[in-house]
Length: 474
Image 1 (tube, rainbow, N blue to C red):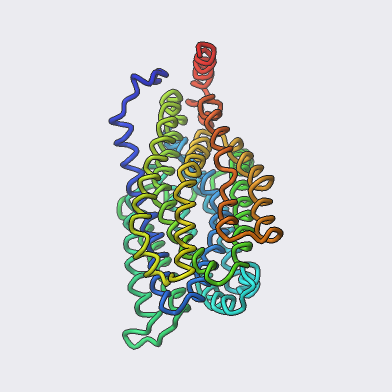
Image 2 (cartoon, helix red, strand yellow):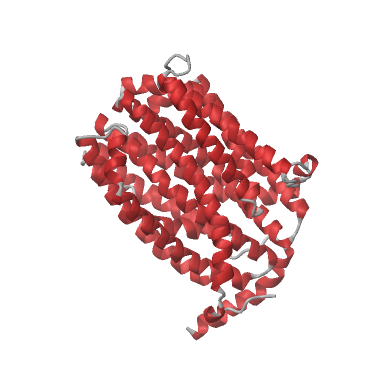
């Protein structure tokens, strides 16, 4: 049954119920993960601003890995959610298998770089020798965690896309508690363990990654969740399946990799600023992760809800949900920013910022609090398009504006004009308002709905005809 394109008949109660059922556990899981990063920074803070800065730059290398595998995560989620909506178990299983292989390939590459070439990695991110030396100690150990972290993310992709979000959330709780306890043991030396400093933080993160992976696997097995354990089904694909998968994943992958490289350029530019700015950026990135982690719960929910409806052929419902999700999520992010800013002083202080570094952190939070509402609006629209089958439009916009407008502004302001750090930081978001307008136009056109299932394809002509008639009336 197809929902008519009439906003007055849109049913808010089931929409909000389904949204919160997925969004809250995923948001909570992401917040726990980010909280672990914040706890790491706080517990390393007594070692000094150099250690905080080094930890922040190592986190940016992890973020680059995130960009490398997130394209496959997004593409895999697109296929899994639509097949889940149409009830095609074989499609769910083989989509997970292709997603798992691609994500693990990225994890192995970054893990090897961290373990065997940490000096090279740190030299790319900063020219400060003292920070490089500390970062090398951390990367050399934490590189072993990367494979387990990405394995957990692949399983989470499958579970989230099939609306089983509690298992990753519970695993994150156990992982964060493990990380917190082991940080106390390894960093400062307790229970007879010698104090390891920054290496202790890396070891605690690695152990927590193992706990997270095993907890997800065991809980899925205990609950009788089928898709994760049908190993043969994961690899029951042919050349056509691979082609379809990579055709959809390729734009997302290009988006994430090129955006990751762009972010690395930004971090390299900021990494050439004074030490107090590097420390402030490290703390800001951790707090930014809180906002993004919270937001990604709603983004994941949007992807699953819209993708499921598109896969089931309920295209009008998907369209109406998407419009409401954009504004609802932007409002939630605004509230989250206000809460964060209300408590920023004790947080920044406890994360070893004071004097000039504290002032820098506050300025970054103010700038981000203003622009992030627009930025997250762009993000939710792009994720919604991807889940509905359109992986190209948002990707092209983001890449073009990043490399034509934003990155040139960052590089010129940092290396040519030598502007203050806050001006460089502001340039990082200069493209967001323009993209938002273009994304809104595409949203209301409905052209982003591109089903991959037979149910969705059958319903598409009627949906497009409705959009065409509505455009003529308007």
